[in-house]
Length: 417
Image 1 (spheres, rainbow, N blue to C red):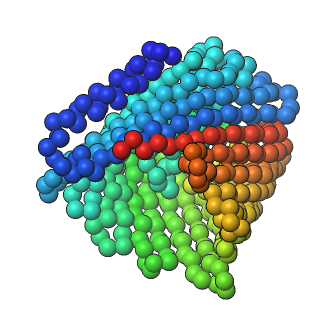
Image 2: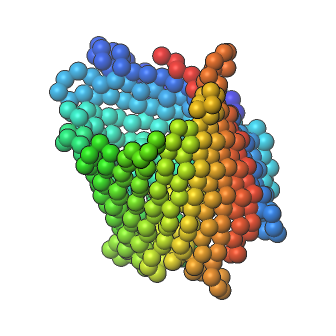
Image 3: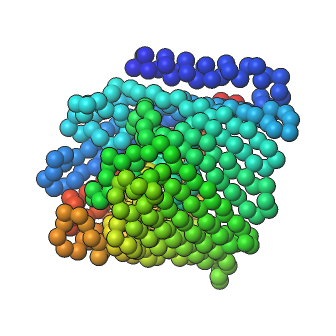
């Protein structure tokens, strides 16, 4: 553990020392910031039935030290960001490992500690920003998994431009991915989803491009394209709109995906189209909504291994993306600030899927999941800013073991400057 801590501090120190030659650039230093985030995370997944591993349970402490510079003076400004991550094992055993919180060895024993370092060079011109190196992109076609101690990350290049009024453009290429509980970058692959796609098919080129256009202050139109070279390509079209209705606001969100194999199709045939919709009414502290989702085509939904989907049925355990699966979903959220308790939030959601075609399962695949999420951020006093969160999920399906899952998170972010 001492060795990992030393590497963690030394790595961030090296990056920080690299900023010294730029000290003369006032904006580079003046606009910089540093934060230290602490995350204490307990994860327990009980499969409830006989299985090769009936339970996964681990407890870990994470430290994330982030340093962001401003930009140097000039028509083109340059900067540098860095993040150091250190994870410590508090409780684990070989029979309970594999939660995604901790790195583990070939014998399934979690490491006592592990560390990561991410460095991103950046350049700014007008309202465009180019980032090269460590990336955690936020795209409809790629949603890195951030639900554990550390986020899934990528190495590559991304350009985001807001130079055209009401239009945000994003394009780039990723070369490799690093899983949330890993310290190594690896080539990328397609999530297998019930072993439909070949897990041995790898690629070191994920290209993406897209735009989000604000047609009006309340209406957003989106189109994005992505391709994992020689494996699959995907198109996304989205529509978001909200308007006042009575004392509240009605929000509409429609998301559509179309995926096919790319080039040689190394992972096998890809033929998927997905429609995911949600209608939400928000009034005061209340928010209630629901919608319909369906998978079309002959294969399941396509997305990078280790990531999550940009679908409304992306739940704690499952995401209802089997071949031809259709699902109805509903959720309710409440902000207790409406009752004079700021910082306290509660949400509950439920989804039920059927008509799924699952490889290795004879018959109609059916499943449902209920998630409960309660969080609180201390608003005043010596513990101001400390966050507490409990997430519980119960999932049942006729083609997998029942699951009861609990996650408990304690967090605090300290602004260093």
